[in-house]
Length: 300
Image (cartoon, rainbow, N blue to C red; front, top):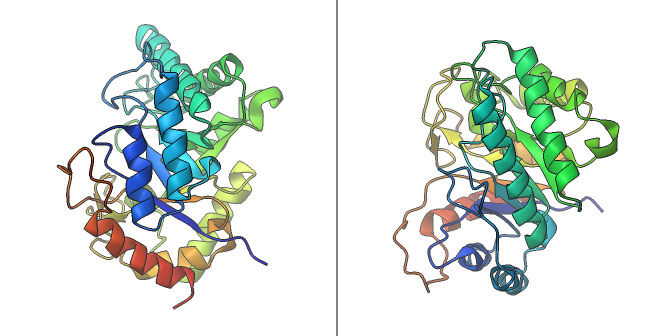
C-alpha cells in the first residue's frame, strides 16, 4: 500500500497559532505550515508559552493533522550564510530559538532560507550555514528536523543548486546529520532555471539529480506556481495554474513517489487575509487548490 499525500497550506494566523490548524482542517488538509514568531524579526529572544503549545496541539487534534506533518517556517531574516559576524551571530541565535519553539510544539520540521553569501563565496557560506544548523541542533534535542529550503537564486543567495545544498549538509557532523535535510519549493526551482514544467520525464530527471547529489529525497515540497518567468530568479508565488509553471506539472509531481509521506505545503495567495480572529473557516483559494490537488492525488 503506497504512502498517502499530506497536503496543507500556510494558513492565516489571525486569532493565534492554533487558528492556523483549525483553518487548515476546515479545508480538508492533512498538513500545515505556520510561523511561531513574526517573520520579519530575528525572534532570538522569543519563547513560546505552555498554554500556547497546548492550544495548538489541541487544534491539531481537532483538525486531524498529525504534528509530524507540520512545518514551521523560520523568519525570513535569518541569513546564516552572511559573512558579517554580528549578523551571523544573531541569525544563528534566531535559528536556535526557532528550533526551541518548534520542538516545544512537537512539529515535524522547521524550514529556513539559508540567506546570502555577502562575501561572494558560496563555499565559505555553506560552512557558515552548516555551523548555524549544527549549533541549533546541538542546543535543542528532539525529533524536530531543521531543513534547508532551495532558493530562487536572486543575487548572492545560497541554495539555488543541488550542489550548494549538498555542500551545506556535507559540513554538518554525523551526530546531528540525521536531524537535517532539505525541501524543494517549485516556484524557486522554476525561477532558478530548473525546467520542472518542460515534461514529466524532465521533472523526474531534476528530482533524481537533487536526490542523487544531496544523497536523500526532499523532506517537504512547497507547491507554488510562479508569477515570474522561467529563470527569472523572482520569488513571487501565485495559485497553481495561474503562473509560468501551470497546473499540469503539479499532477506529475503528485505522481512521483517522493511526494508521498511528507508535507506538501501550498504557499499560494489567500483570498481573505482579514479573516476574523474567531473564524476557523477555510480560505476559498485553499479550497480551490485542495480540489485540484485532490484530483491529481487520485490520478484524475
